Length: 446
Image (spheres, rainbow, N blue to C red):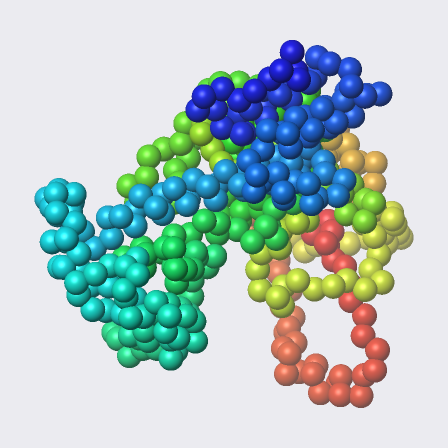
């Protein structure tokens, strides 16, 4: 049944790849399930691929199923954009539906009213063999096929628009199809982008134990999975937790009048990356988007995995010979009793406890037990005149910090006034210094 599979009419290569992968999982072509799928599906797709794609696949040594999927997706994307380009280029220069009808009714009349995008003359179009610019070199970009006044290359584009009120000195075209090709009519209105991704931001990520190519997107807070990738993850036995259909969030693509994306599934799974033999791992929530085209790794998860750095370069310091966290016990100064001057005229206040969120109760208890074991805090089992409420703060990295609201208690403390030195005060004393050290005071508030 597997070897007799063929794409049905109108079926894309991506959908056929999913169908072939599902059927191959029922066969036994190799020593393991993964090897069985790799051998059979790759051979099947190479056999049925179009000639231009087949040539690319055969040139690839040690082709894997992940690479095959990536190349098929890229090929389909380029073919789709090329189709859109062809249909759109026929409408270039036409301003309304009535103009389209006139173009279909009398091509000679339309050709006489349009300017050639190669030479700028009227009476013919860019694909006319009699165009005088077809075999001429451009004075701006040196390319053959158009005059300088119709040059749309990066050099010509910048010069032609220089000095205009709305010009942008840093304007550039990203991955745009070169319309100076002899077989493609040039127009003034269209520039087709087939891929705005240079693939440097796409990394292999394991989601629930299954390898997936995801694009790092700092503009997306959440992790998005396209429906095609979601089906493949299910077929390969992805490990996930808490799958559900309801989603309280609304996702919108870029654009003011964009329609909301439809989320068909939400789930949690472990996500990990490998770097120089080390595995970086965290847990994350994923949202499956209907009719998506690319799996997106959101900002928070990317930062947690260390694959995304945001901020000014000066904030990304390299720590040299630093002490690793939790390698030393919390330092204590024993035999010293601290005396805090108290204003006896202020009446003690026993405040009510603030009820923390139920989701944080377990983490608060664990944090308190850890502080007790480190001998940072101690339990009080007797009556106390002063009681201040506990405040739990969730830090940016997800860790929990326990604070105490001491504002009422501070009213009874007699403050001692000491002049604080400024930078200008101690800077002259450092003029002969040769050695500097840095003190880690991350637990100084204890």
